[in-house]
Amino acid sequence: MTLRYVSSALAAIVLSCGLPTLDLAQAQTRDASLLPPEKGGVITVAGCLQPGEKDGKYLLANPRLGPIANVAEGTCDARVDDRTLDLQDTSEQGINSSMLGHWVEVNGRLEKETDADLTNLRELEVRSFRVLPVVPPPPVIPPRAEAAPVQVPRPQAEQQPFTPPTDTIAPPEERPIGTTGVAEPTLPKTAGPLPAIGLLGLLSLAGGFGVRFYRSRERG
Image (cartoon, rainbow, N blue to C red; front, side, top):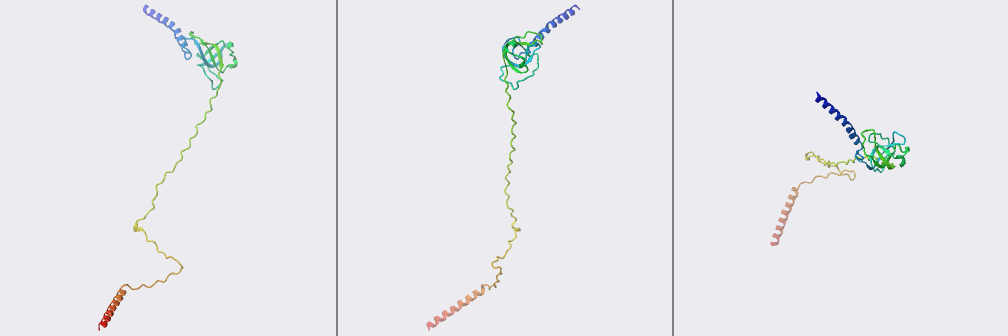
């Protein structure tokens, strides 16, 4: 029983000592994007200027490592969280309430983070500052609608003239060629070549007899 009580007491002591350590570790990781919490140094940081809890106190919300050339909008409404920086010596450098809700760039010394209380913000001693100039982004030009491609008709295959089969071709119709409008008389058909051949043979025979008769007279 005594050993159990001793172990419980030791565990309670370790837990009670370890809680602040956990809080400190959590507090030290909130500003690691600017400088490690265990280190301090001169940095340039930009953020949204917001009012502090007391009059004349100012905070730098949504801090980001600078330098930054310009912003798209001059006004801002950043939320104050555990990353917000508590600005020091602001009145000496000319920071006033007319700049609240605007993006500013501050150059100064960022202090180490040694406080375990998350409500205590990391301090930044201001050495110089400027209100960031506003450069609106160029207007977005919508892309041109591409013209629909022209549909080029495909060349159709040449159609060969239809030639009907030979046995189905009808003979061309004979039409009389008109000249004077009067139909020419039809001539009678002549005889065949046989009568002419017979006549020619008869004449040859008569000629032969005539020559023979003539020669016989010359001899007599």
